Image (cartoon, rainbow, N blue to C red; front, top):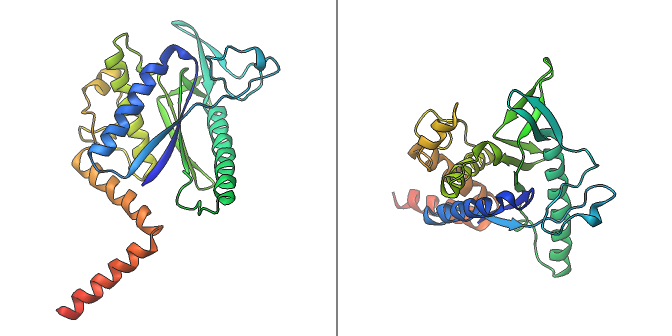
Length: 250
């Protein structure tokens, strides 16, 4: 089973919606026999000199004051997270947490190689933006998946998916998480009615089936199961023995 760490970075505003989406993703993976599971973490991270005075209900980025960006738009000022900063924070958190878990496993004489997740999904409450390198404006991202030193870092903003109906809101986030999980395990964008087909409007996203199309589904299962088998020498050896027996019988 491939485990993926899942963290929420933000305040209480969207936490219940994010947890509903997280639960639905795990339910989907289990019901479809996809060997991936999300593990929810509640990182309590400090931010700046006054971090000790922050309300306990908040989960704050480990950053200096002024980490967020305020952007002037036609609809007024928008508070956002810098994409590069979020990816750095998630990568640092993943490396640190993997190291801590490895020390625990080694202390108990356990083999950590197959146990420690190499992927983290960070769901954030504010929009994710990055400054265009050629023009003076910010680009928004619904979600991003990036590989750094062999580790998968996924960031998803719930802000663009907001809807006053929590069920609809949660369903949008559910599909976004599935989309980025697909990228983390080797899927490209798709042109079918599929969560791997990126929308041009939120209405398109609502019309997408909350599922992978048959082609993406099979590719995802192949990719995950192959990764599992690569770490399971016994399974691979059994497979080789079975093929040799079949050729001898023929």
